[in-house]
Amino acid sequence: MTSVFSYEEFDLSDVRTYPLASRPSKAKVEDFAKPSRPHASVAEILRGLPRVLAAADFIAVVDAIARAAREGRGIVWGLGAHVVKVGLGPVLIDLMERGLVSAIATNGAAVIHDFEIAWSGATSEDVDAALGPGQFGLAEETGRLVNGAINDGVAAGLGLGQAVGGFLLRSQPAFGRYSVLAAAARLRVPVTVHVAIGTDITHMHPAASGEALGAGSLRDFRYFVSNVARLAGGVYLNCGSAVVLPEVFLKAVALARNRGIGLDGLTTVNLDFIRGYRPTTNVVTRPTAGIGRGYSLVGHHELMIPWLAAAIIAACDDGGTPATSTAGA
Image 1 (cartoon, helix red, strand yellow):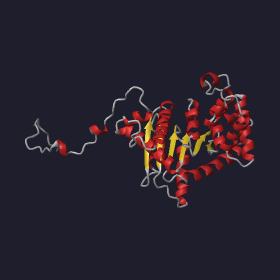
Image 2 (cartoon, rainbow, N blue to C red):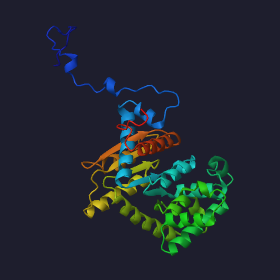
Image 3 (cartoon, one colour):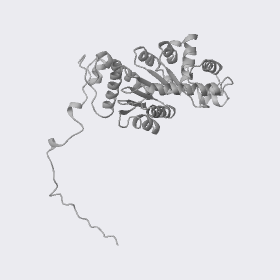
Image 4 (cartoon, one colour):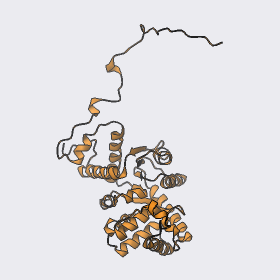
């Protein structure tokens, strides 16, 4: 039978204590934030961040990208469609022009948004309003021209990213200067597109070819594996893809390791407004176990990516890192 306890106060008279100064502590005043002065530079603001938790991770990511750039290592950006849709093309294009993008991996929806932005200066239809009348996803130019570019490009031996990027660069649409794919084609930055059949509105159009989509996406996957295999000491960022790109990245890492290619010093980053299972597991933890470091940065892309880009540029221009450079202090 279980014993019945009584109301008895615990005796604290012999509790052992220790001097506060002898205890290792995780929060220290030397790591605290520093107030920002008016008109402070990006580098000064970065140096004023506290060196704790998410701020410390942000600084570490900027440091890793700046170091990779200085050492000529790879910096591969994985972009979900939302990143393009919320207007971050000019920021990404600027990073490409500065040599801070070695390659881009994306999905079919991002290609659609990028095409529509370049062609008409607008994208992202109202799904609720269009679905009822049966008009969702059926913009004529998007279906005909994107599929046409894919079909022709894949037939010529290109991947999906090369096909659409090259088409946009040659076509010079009215808003082409905002196109990430056209800029990548101009700057010869490889773009790989990883599609899941049936997920993109272009697949709803009669011009869609399963043969071209499958062959082009598989070709792009193999290009992507080659890009990932060059990431020793480099950085891979997954920005806004919850399933497709984390899965593709993990398979690329697996193939590189199967060939005996080391990825020592790899830094991976997942940047999104939530922490999902696949990005956390397949980008942040598994690929870097024992060889590198993974980080999760939580926040909205329209805020975090411009801030990250500005921090990277400041770190590279300073010739140091936000943690160590003293320029402008």
